[in-house]
Length: 102
Image 1 (cartoon, rainbow, N blue to C red):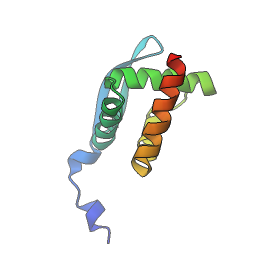
Image 2 (cartoon, rainbow, N blue to C red; image 1 turned 30 degrees about the vertical axis):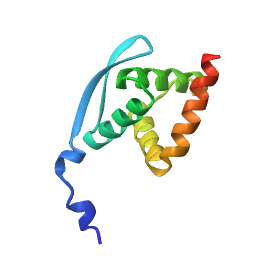
Image 3 (tube, helix red, strand yellow; image 1 turned 135 degrees about the vertical axis):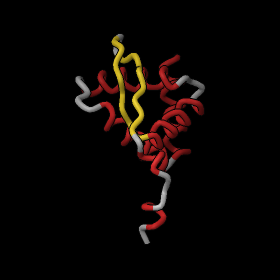
């Protein structure tokens, strides 16, 4: 039963660090490779670079919740939300971006 999960390529769960700019500061975010693939996809379908998406997400999260103690966990949970209902998540995100622009 678990072979489908256990048999995946180890490249999927190897850590990859990327340098990003969040809140005006350069930092490094370390995630499993597969999560970076999903984050890149989310950014692309929203017509943003990954850096733009991460910066916007960070800014919005800090506006809503104050300090973000574990941004990598926020990113992983965002990926799970996206993968569970991609159409709903993207529709909501598009509406919010449109509302902010006006």
